[in-house]
Length: 171
Length: 167
Image (cartoon, rainbow over all chains, first blue to last red; front, side, top):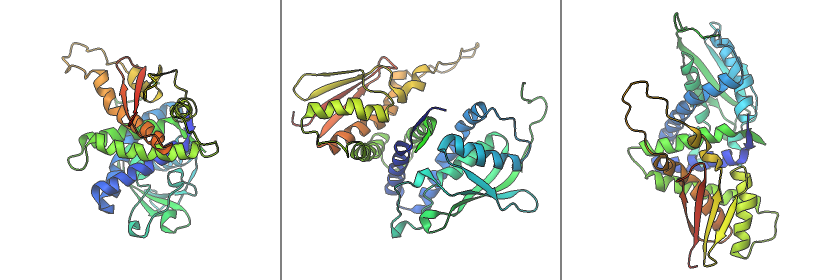
């Protein structure tokens, strides 16, 4: 992967969030837009991820979550996430980030406490998984900017449809 | 700290899409002007922090072409020209941010009648709003008010024309 100094990305993201806040004047709407933008990014980015990580198709949700955490975050944001908190059915888990480059240099003022500043990431994950036929819900449940210890995204598998014949990978 | 270059590609692509499709709010030009100008100011502040102030416009332009461009757009500007009356033309023969657009070829038509492709120059215009605003912001941070326009008629080469206010 070609890399750049992350502050260019971080500052552009911050400036964009600021613009969205000015545009919509409603944090809920901003959260929604960030998720939506992330979704389109995830749909595009998954191709690059599959190509460059030389990874095989994930067989199940559990494997997909591990790949996002261990390889996805590493590859694009150069940070690592851990998977935790699986439910018994294996359909829900959490991605925990101790370090999140998006929030470097960021402090939220009092009146923006409802803002899910990094919500783009939820959208990216949702968009990327959608392209491999996994329909998920993804939301921030803990956020360092809101005073929590770590960043935690809760991931919930809604449905998945395995690709069936004749739509196989050509090896 | 580093991140993948493609993060920036996906983000700028999505920024353009978002403001091009938005039903309400500011125009693409206005929104990306504001976004880019803030980024340019912040980056210039960071990169120029540890150097003596640049008092002459030409000095500032040289710094922009070499140091700033190198950091933000991955390589220095190839050629800087000026009329010595406040107009500068910065030529980047391989402008990194439009590299993918420049390489992208339309697929062969396979007998289908596809709508005519949008000319690349036109497509490029939307993607040049942000870099132009970043450059304007960086120069504003150095105390130079200016306008910046870009010409992408011969991609991947892009010419940026900077006109200082009040020459």
